[in-house]
Image (cartoon, rainbow, N blue to C red; front, side, top):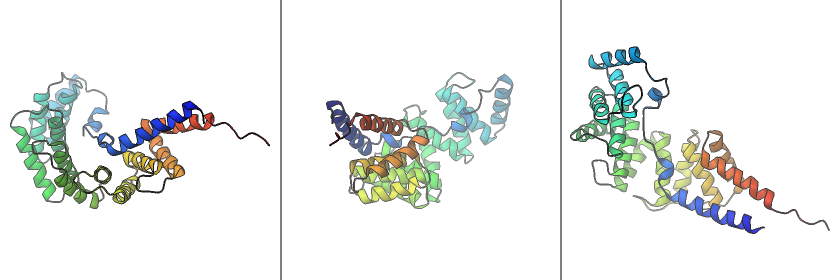
Length: 260
């Protein structure tokens, strides 16, 4: 093996451990993708959304809040975004409640409305709503309006994960990998990760690839690692794509055995 290949292997192993044990592979920042995936509204459509929002239609209030948050078709205005999202949240729009929480996570929430958002969210989570349970876990991980508490976060993630929520399953796998709020447990990391991966969760696929590449809590298996990386890469994950490309370069760098 050449010096370049040796260095690549060391860097690869370091990258695997850093990503596996960090929380960065589990981030989620907005629920507005559906609204933002459409073309920016023209003046006529924007006027119609605004009129419906003013008339008390929750869906339009949520859409208008998203447009103001991201500055799509209107000038970006976090105060107006929170105003419209809160109106929608008051009408039981869970998407609006989630978006309010994410705004607070970014430090862009308006004074006084966080308590309202958390109260509505907790009420829904206590009733068994799976996505609310997941977001409550995120609230306690990030300390949004509460003291950060990984143990409480694990409780909420577990509730959602047991109901089959892939995001919660993937996050729970990460908590067990890092020993946050629970004792470090690589077997539970693998099991929860596999449940999420079975639903096509891209970060779970990536993290399972890392597990099998590093051999943490499982027998090291490069073929399984490659298979999981390939599934994540097929979904557009750039880290998995980079790993597969690196392997291809390393394979080409290894000299063939001399003929006898």
